Image (cartoon, rainbow, N blue to C red; front, side, top):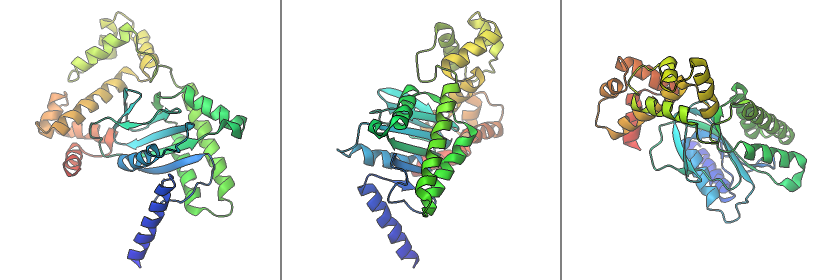
Length: 306
């Protein structure tokens, strides 16, 4: 009986892939959407999401009105979009616009999990569809912190596809539009700069200093003095032009370097920690787990079995 259940799930998956709809839930793929705008919806690993993206990208009938929303739950991944390399980490939200396909960066992603939603928005369907498409396009390739309610709303939308009772279609439609409203509001309220223009000279200099001195306990005051701004002015400008506070940006760059060193394999976990200025390997492990959901040693083991 268990084997039959596995075969049934596999058949559903094959049907879903053939139709270019991959539904990844706690149980099995769902063969059809409950809202006509949805091309694909899921919660799963980075690998699962790429499987879905690959299936869609090979479809010659893939329409040009597709937008994708990704919310990373844990782990860090790099995607290449229109020649740009984007690093997305825990709690980050990313939107791509029409004809902006997410591609692999060529580097190994850490083990992680994300929600994704791919929408097929037809402007001929009405003003609401056109307005949603325009709003998502306006914020394309910006990386912001996801609103707290977004994950719950993704779960609600997935739950409707798991139950799929007689009320599922209108309930899923309502859940979808609530989710999109929350996402667009978050983008409208977020500081401009992430994924948009290059930072100004002062912020670019500060970013270079951070990169060169990742192992040093730099303060906002020190960075501000280096670019001849007051701490308050520097903090506000950095946030406005990058989408991150100086401290958050430094943490993310230390994490990025840690991932590179762990993947290289030339240093022990303790040596990686000391190289990046962590006083102990335990402190480094706590930092690493906060961003990726796993310890540095578990992450390295994961890379070896990929």
